Length: 329
Length: 148
Image 1 (cartoon, chains in turn cyan, orange):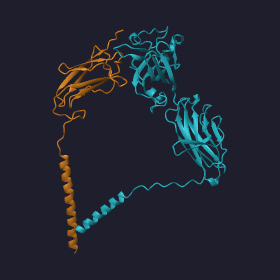
Image 2 (cartoon, chains in turn yellow, red):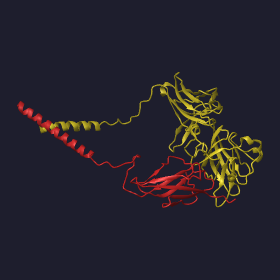
Image 3 (cartoon, chains in turn red, brown):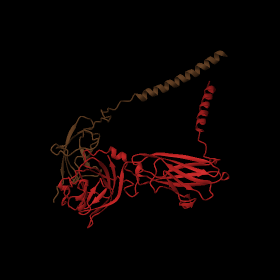
Image 4 (cartoon, chains in turn brown, purple):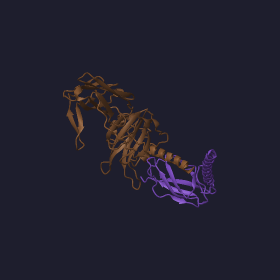
């Protein structure tokens, strides 16, 4: 009885060993392809805003015995802005980790939505970078790309990328607001006006910038709606007709990469504006510091915006540099 | 010989029955522990009777404190007096309570709270760990006054 009992135990142990031995095979270098082949990655991150570049790296290669590369092209579903290009350099990374460019052909040519590079060197492998500058026509739509390469043996390969959303929002960087001078902010125009221009654009003025040192209060840099209580805009005489009651919600640490001059890795996107609830927001934000920001909704409910504080300076200058993303509701 | 095999078979069977019974017994004992009492929120009810606010904080929409000085907590009177900075958006504040051990707060704080109605100050009730003592705390907010 005992021996039979142990026989089962051995079987159980054997099964456990078998299971433990089931590990993945080691990596082995794949065999090179026997024909022209291609691959593509999207290198840029974040919202694909109008005016910004979407960057791709497109790789193509064929065995040396089959011939060489003749041309590469990209077709976008919506023609890019005129500055869209496919680089005529291929890159390799040297021992120091630096990308080194190797010219492979003439500069690219744009023909409508198609961008082409024709090779003029004898090469059987290349990785070209494609920079699609998002056009105004793509705002609020999606855009797709078809990359293709042609080799001297007549082979053609292609690779599809996308679709990618193009957000509705706009942006404007590094606007300087100065206390008592260019202190009137228009969301509609994404601009800053002085007293005289504010009077001419009174219906577009959404915020007033001011700096006050009111010890023991902490006031300093502020963005307030023209209709805010006078105690939040002491000493400010508004131009005639500047009276909007803009909603303002103060935040801190929302460091949008686009607005912070590519310093951080967060993004404000269309979705943030769509989900924003400013129903109980105030109409002023005081004591703003560097990297603080305000969510804004215009009095007519037409626009929402996020204003990021890039820098502040007190002393005699009393200035703030701001950047803005704006969403049309 | 045949009888010998049958006896062997019965012995093995008996062995497994014993083992199974043993595990069953262990499972039953492991399952028979006394249940700890929990409340409707799934929190442990203990024997503690302390019912106090030990610290109070108010954060603005930027999650930075809006207090101009430390909040004054009167456990006997059940009041919390806090002065906030000039320009505080009273409609959008995040209160934070630190309570005595095992106590809980009613109503629960689930997000922003509107403190703008100063004539009707907010009242929060602290419930002791044994869930038998309830102490209301009224929050009185004053705003720094501008000296323009």
